Length: 352
Ligand code: IPM
Ligand code: MN
Image 1: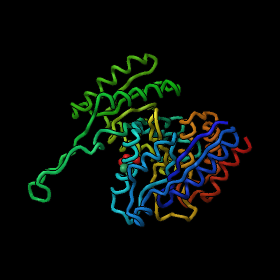
Image 2 (image 1 turned 60 degrees about the vertical axis):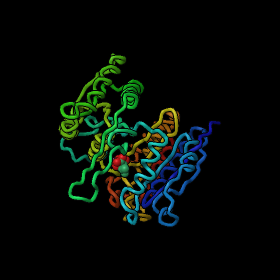
Image 3 (image 1 turned 180 degrees about the vertical axis):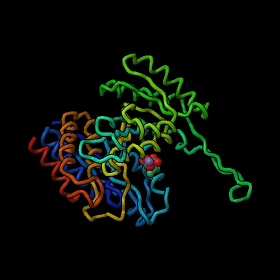
């Protein structure tokens, strides 16, 4: 029997609530397809930080590196200063484990309402490949004369040929693997004439190796317009860290909101981390009202990543069936509790 070691970080707020439903679904899938998942729980997050002062030390990162996949609930606590946990846990893991891809599917499922008028599931089905270790997130820069009237703050965008190329190559490989037809580079070549010159040159070179995939380019500002006006134009998008962060929040909204949006922080050769991208929503903690679909879709991506393709595809079917039964994707208005939604997905898998 195949055995996979999975690290689980339930995290803060509603993180543990949705992780419980994700695990339920993972267990149903492993039972069905005859593989074993070995979970190891980690208590990283705001709660532990407030109690012990520990965020995430290097030995803990090394511990996580041993796992093929990590399932993360949410990090973020109302009593912790913004940035501490985000930088100290989430970004630290992305960087230290070299999870250089942030993969964010934007797919509107049948039965989910989108705020975009006259658009439906056939129009909204694309994937954003966000570079996840460089750009403005690299932390390059600093202050001069801090706290004085002459203060200068510099934040530099780091773009390496290697980092850009592996990200672009991943997006073409992904398109090829998933039978997608087009890859669009999202940038700002008209203003950011150094960074996106490198991106565009690299993109054009790599695209030549994939003659069956259309290579396209769009400026990031126009992209946000087209997400709303013509989402059907997009198939696979590839972009830098900051632009990817921004456009995927818009993407999440057009696919039905944070209750459904999942993402993967991927190191194709190492340890990857899957998460619902919605955050910890502390006010809903333990109430049974939070939507677990995003977390369940994160487990779907996790299964696909570890190579359990059949299981991943059944989880997606089960989620699609469950969504049709739900009243909405919004917390407290789903027609079911968090736990009941997990049970619907689980039962579908068991009966399939
Ligand atoms: C995301 C989040 C993070 C980011 C924050 C919490 C650091 O917004 O995963 O998109 O900016 O990458
Ligand atoms: Mn974000």
